[in-house]
Image (cartoon, rainbow, N blue to C red; front, side):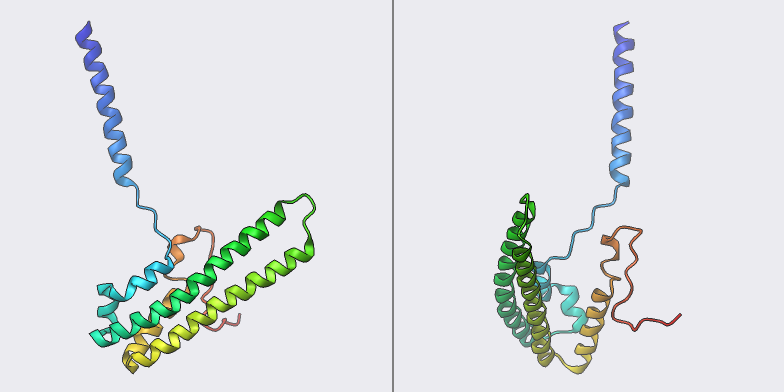
Length: 171
């Protein structure tokens, strides 16, 4: 009788273990959001370096540009996070002050604009370091990233972003 119970428990345990293994093996890893640190470190990444065929001097120049740019942008992002937290705290209040909300939203928009301008300036400085062929490849990579094709996998399936880099087609 004991051996039958033990055999039954082993069979159940084996079934559970096989089920878990099959389930875990079938799961795809969740994609990670692209972070600023990925972009900062991206120039040392072999694929990106090889795609643009960067030489060592170009790599050093781009890394110096990136370091300067992201040092400034990181400070702006920290301020942006503080402003967003402040806005959230005001929104939690029973009677939020609309004037404060408008002021903070404008400050947040200005900080976001500063980040965009900083990144644009960064691209213009990097453009000076790249050859014409490298620039074409670089802008093609940017176009893909900005068009949503690169980030589609991170979005819900029902969300269909339109390609913002291409002119809108007339119907």
